[in-house]
Amino acid sequence: MLGRSSHPYDRSGPPCRLLLVSDRRAPSEALRVHLAYHGFEILAHESSAPGAAEAARREQPDVVLIDAAVPGGWQPIVAALEGITPHERIAVLAAYWSSEGREAARRSGIGATLLKRVEGAELVTRLRSLAGLADALPSA
Image 1 (cartoon, helix red, strand yellow):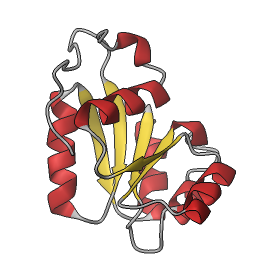
Image 2 (cartoon, helix red, strand yellow):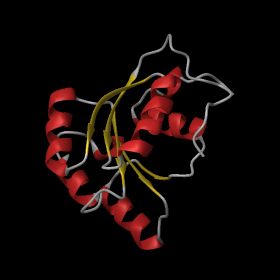
Image 3 (cartoon, one colour):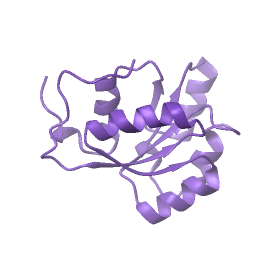
């Protein structure tokens, strides 16, 4: 469940630049607000593979967060980001991960498979870790 962490991100550290890929505006807005509170800079919000690739080329995000429920699935978006964003800096957020889905994600080389019910602090920590900014997190 998303919420404010008891250890919010220290805003004196570097911001984490994030590209969000989702076609659902209301949940994406809640996610955007939560991540912005914790020091993320949301560079763009895209809903398609071509849009995500163009935004990634233009913005050079630290990390990409993809909603697995985008039309056509997350795999075409990951493929479109090939050569633009390192796959280990991509996280896919899903309501449920089957064993086949996790295996497909592992084969694609993405950095993380996350559940939509992830705690807000864990989401922040995992995304900053993928971006290589984990050392800027406060200690627990």
